[in-house]
Length: 461
Image (cartoon, rainbow, N blue to C red; front, top):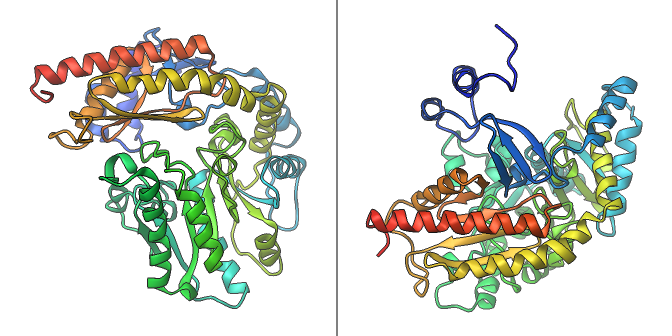
């Protein structure tokens, strides 16, 4: 086979892709007939495809390219580390400088008392770690029956069998089932499920489902509660202000562990280093990945509080991965965090990008088929509806309208994802006001085109 390069015709690349590459979360036969869009370059918030189109990436890759594409410093660090020590594990009473330095840097950035990191290769792996970690914690404390983890419907914690079980997405459970010992309560999705309640009353009601579940299961059987500060893949569900304080009260009252899944919300996405800081959450464990390296290398981990780490450290913890704390991935992540600190990227989100985007994003609610537009930091969602006042759903299958809108975005060289009939964004954190203007303009054009198409097809009256 000849060498495959960016300079090959798109059709040839698509044919090879269809013949040999199995895509995640995809009906591969259908994609093979359509042909994948081939991305060839990235710089800042912009991607270039094999046809030369310039695309603004409203999703930062997969919620991860926080510092933007094309930073040569990270490649230079990776090469230096490969030349010096390409790989060694952290089993067998060994360590290496990149893992040590990264763990120390994470402790510096994390909330007070969160001083220990168990590394993994991804957020999914880290959440699998958390299952074993919390069960082993209670086992060492002489309460091995505390094994149940409570999570939320429509939450997302990865797609491994463990992470997928923690997540509350039925489509994932349908493809292979889920492990025992995980139960789910309702999500704080006010737009879809709040009815006539106020947002604050709804948030309290949903949080109090946790207390009811703990009492129903028996506190002696419950190990932990896990939740994303903002549900990302579930549609950027920003909880009412009453929600997280009540969750915190409940976990504190019953003495169960709180896991904040910060895979998306960590490393600046919400305008603070961690979403837990934005929402006043005090977790025992935080799951991290994505923004830790800005996606330049696969790496994740569990940040563990001092008390839990002390218990786990008192005995064997039979768990780990070949690539836990991989030296190249750790070195790249450390360089990513250096750039974020020195260039004040978190401050840019909080003081520049968020306030500028907020007004323009929320103004999209004036569009005839947008019922709600919310934003925290640089992650936002708009709910598509045929009737704003009734917060109605479309009569077509859930997601049909969202998919049509996403296709118009893609045609207009904007990556904006759909989750059901919600449209969501999470652009690179380095996005400028001028680039926000482009994103909003293309989003409006796409909404207008989708609206016109729905009216023509009789789906919007």
